[in-house]
Length: 133
Image 1 (tube, rainbow, N blue to C red):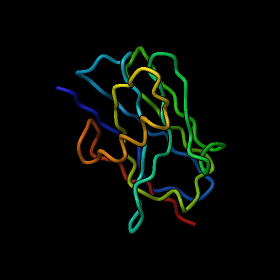
Image 2 (image 1 turned 90 degrees about the vertical axis):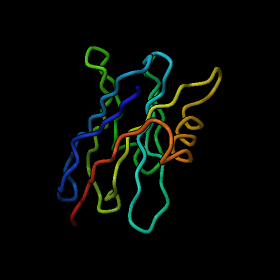
Image 3 (image 1 turned 120 degrees about the vertical axis):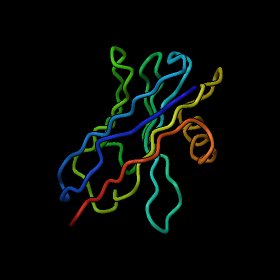
Image 4 (image 1 turned 120 degrees about the horizontal axis):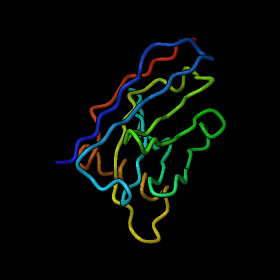
């Protein structure tokens, strides 16, 4: 049984940092991409970042590209999202999801599938990030 769980959200002031963690079990990590997406009240779900477990390649949504960093720790089967210089517009529930990466599939496409598939698919319950101005 695949399980995915996020942690690390909280309330911070604008300009500060947070690191989200995502742990997973029950899957063959090398076959998967792990994505972060978010949903703010009244807004559509938005893909934020994605990482290919096997080689660590990454993708970022334009508004976070210079502020967020996604990484993975193979020793602990954990994916991180380091969020720096947070803005009030980053306030949302952040979800971690896992998707088996198809041959020749790019990370943006994989993340888009995770977003569209929600609430189905492999994902955590979400963690709230609130950024005050």
